[in-house]
Length: 130
Image (cartoon, rainbow, N blue to C red; front, side):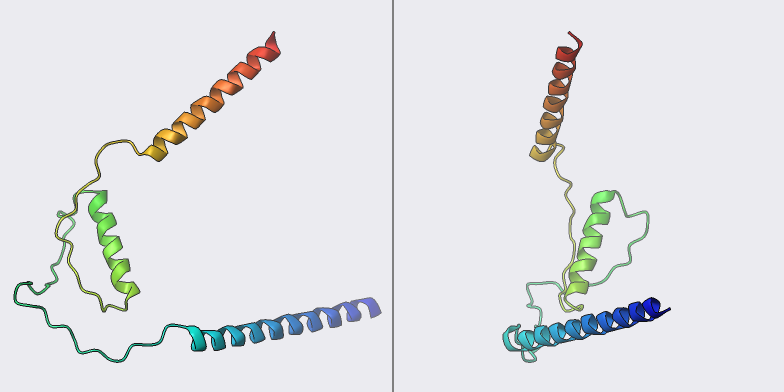
């Protein structure tokens, strides 16, 4: 029973020390952030759209208008871009152009590596069977 109680004491003491050290590190990071972090910008006057630019309007998109994965990816990217800025940035997606059907250099390089590794494996097996 004495070993069990001693184990619990060490456990609690270790836990308290780790939590205390983490709190000190968090405090140090917060101090550095306040000293060297980005300074908050003063309130800016809202930017008025020029007459050459049309004001942005929100349109409801129905499921029939979604034509492919490119449109879905563009929509998700636009939502993330807007949410990242706290809804301050305003823009509109006017056109989504799919990438060409060319194969990517990364795809071709990966396929080349895979085939050369297979050739090495086959030639190694042939040498063992002889």
